[in-house]
Image 1 (cartoon, one colour):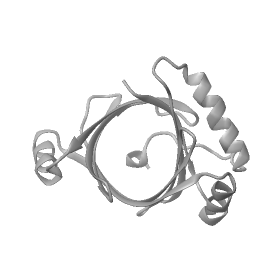
Image 2 (cartoon, one colour):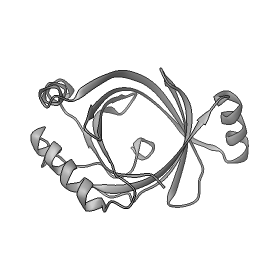
Image 3 (cartoon, one colour):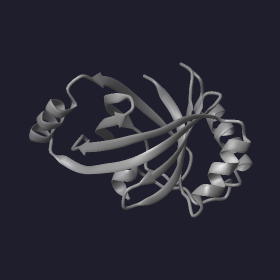
Image 4 (cartoon, helix red, strand yellow):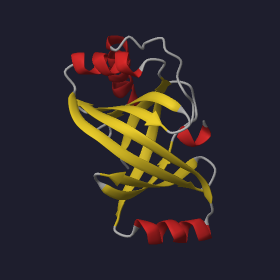
Length: 167
């Protein structure tokens, strides 16, 4: 199962962090408009339908601990041809928990995805995702994430537990 090491931080100054990310030499992949619809799922798991422009739709299932800090996330992605029909079906069968709307600026720094998110009703956030290779220990990704946070001046910034669903 694919997995990564990730961390989420609420940002008081998005423009300053954007400048710092650019100074790292990260590749700017542009802004994605995302709508995540979260559905009821068994305890410990999350299930959402992500509708994204550009990029289409994906069903995302993932498990990760809700801790304030670096955490390992196991996930599955499934491309969806009919997001409206799937959303209606899952809503009927499972129930909708919440809808989260955001503009996500995506940067790539090696294997690390750097997201600068402007989340409707919640504010601005940084999310790092260090994608791990099969069998690679999470400690390797944690070292990489800590290094990037240090270089961004966010080493001591308070971390967010949970997902945008929980905020």
